[in-house]
Amino acid sequence: MPPDEITVRSEITWNGITFPVTSLRSDTTDDIGELTRRKGRLSGYNKEHLRKITIEPGVQDIILSLSHYKALEEIVIENPSESIYAHFSIWDCPKLKDIYVPSNVDSVPQLRDCPNASVIYAPDHPKYKIIDGDIYSRNEKTLYDVPSTTKKYVVKDGVECIAFGAFAGNSNIKKIIIPDSVRKIERKAFYNMTNLKKVKFGNSVRKIYGGSFRRCNNLKVLVLPKNIRQVTDGFGGKRFCKLKRLYINSPKLNKANFTGIPKTCSIYVKNASVKKMIQKQSNLKGKIIIQ
Image (cartoon, rainbow, N blue to C red; front, side, top):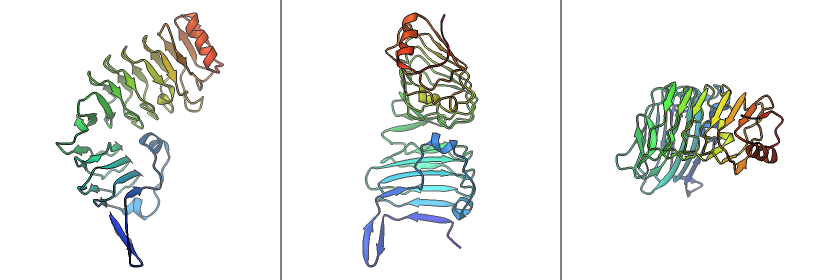
């Protein structure tokens, strides 16, 4: 019977020759948003029985995407002697325990539907810290990941940036409130939030990536704040975007890529110049209405 523990060695020997192992990649290297949109199936010995993964010092580049590992309890990064990068996207591993990140490991493990697990950083970690279970930069100005199971999530005042995929794949949150301190929201920030119904923006956000809202199929109404100047990246088409009404409160847009807004969605704008900009830069078939 295969073992229920796997150790990734920092070197292996074959035919009398020793080779260093510097990188570890799983079969899929999906980010958490892509991982949680897949309908993973229980199959194979590892998903049923693998209990522990240990990664030896010397493995410097780690990317693991794991879903539906029903017996997995531990992922151990043994203290490396030099700085390394590690990314973990982990979904639906019900027995998984806390993941400890040493101070010289650059890693934002993203956990979804792992009820017994959280991320713990070394107290002297130079880049990241945990506040109420969520991952922030040390200065608390960047919000990196939100595994929260709350229904209504209020972004902490003082946060200036919501990072790539920070909320992606979170199926618990239904409403997000963003304070005026947030100036930047990166790509895929809200991707595949299947139960998200409302986002309330602060007034400092100036750029929105439409792709951030792809696969948010319960999001029917979106209100963009008055200081928005750029909308880009496309919304994904009727298969991935279910918006019915989009309100643009900005009097001016410099970029207006609303490609992928379904034709059943009505867009409400403040003036004719915004309407003209949208018509010029987007291939829209729906209504654009001046309020």
